[in-house]
Image (cartoon, rainbow, N blue to C red; front, top):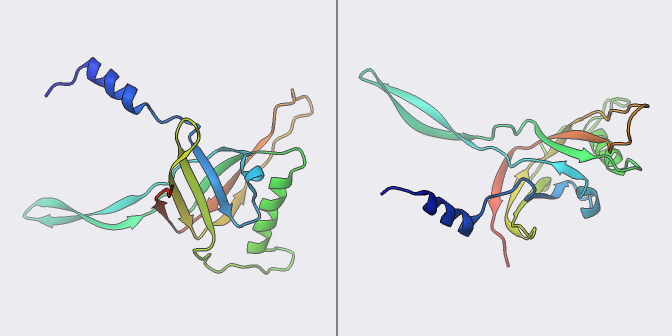
Length: 176
């Protein structure tokens, strides 16, 4: 069966295309982040999941056999934030990072984060209604990026990254 440009056009009209603004972060790690805080997230990405391949040699041929799962990028999931003028979001992230390890006392919570620490992501339609959700489990903040300033700047809003780590993720059905 051959496909034509008319087939492409028809299907594209019916299904449309996903857009770069159709991902929302609904929950980030702990309950201290509100919806107002999460509005300042500029970019994030859906996580990666890979099935490990194992080559099994037999009579000079390598047969590929599926193995366990690997969550590539789970050691460093990046979120880009706009900095609010009071630096409230940055302060919350610094506080969270301080609970993991406080260098002034050499103490902290370095245990494996449980399934109660999650990131919830939602893919949305064009009207920003959730289509599907994902939860990343066992989240903790790993790195808090810099905020660059320039005294001769033009007043451009500032941004910074937060890098989080997680253990695994699962898709969640949307309940009406």
